[in-house]
Length: 93
Image: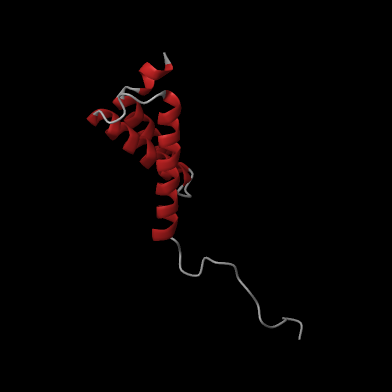
């Protein structure tokens, strides 16, 4: 039953749209990374690249693509100076 549901491409695309909408409400690139991963798996399912994959492999593919998308989003859209703040002098001196 689960493998039949995961082989339907529009379920992945609908999940991607839901996650992208959730990203608007809770920003931080986490849900956008998941949305990109779900959209990529949905497009791969539509093309037929995932027809012989088990649900476990599809979940692994989704999580790997989501992680890569999240890391790329953090690298591309990082704010300048968003690193840790260090101080060289004491304010009390």
